[in-house]
Length: 284
Image 1 (cartoon, rainbow, N blue to C red):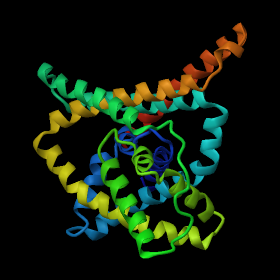
Image 2 (image 1 turned 45 degrees about the vertical axis):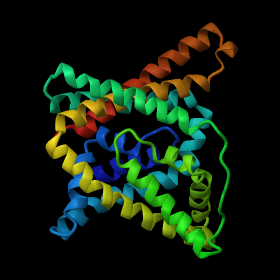
Image 3 (image 1 turned 60 degrees about the horizontal axis):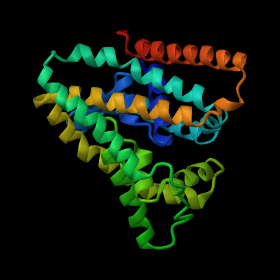
Image 4 (image 1 turned 135 degrees about the horizontal axis):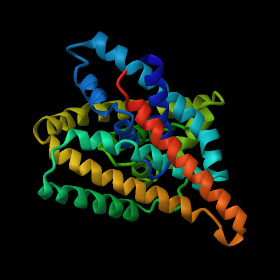
């Protein structure tokens, strides 16, 4: 169970790094979202049980972030379409799990449609494609501490909502390059970068704890509305992933055989992603 949660956490960590991907959607995809909310909300009443459950996930997230900052982003840059198709399969694999949780209510499809177009609009408005920059390289003042703390609080609290990309939220406040440049340098044991990430991490923890109660309350009282909305967010994630992947491919430079090979590889990636999520969600 612990090893599986580390693997699931690593997938969530990878999603944290990639602009446009939602870590919370991947938490839904691997069947951990509600459990994480419950564990966070029960930290006071059941410290041992919550800590035991959350620790492997946190370790996995850290591994995912550290690996993806260098290796996974290189793979995505080298094989963009295949990578995004794989992520699409991971997201699609969670749809059957969500459908099982809801009763069919045609009127509630309004939540799905609003969530779908709302997320597309937010991502477009945020300027994900705009180049960011390294705003801070080290902590030089109390203001820098406050900036990093707020960045963690802002990104993590919104990221906990299914469909919202933490990386996009960091881009909105021009801190994406700052944070992941610090992560990359921290891997090389840069003391300045490690210190820079401390207030960011503290803000992120506070943000998750604060929003977890709100989301748990919504799930208990308006579960169907939440899950219908999540379906819309999943749809928007698939749309963005496919669009991003196809935009990175130069189809004019492909031969007929090359196109066929690419299609076959993409189908394999899609199936692997879909089956992986189904496997992660299987009852143990």
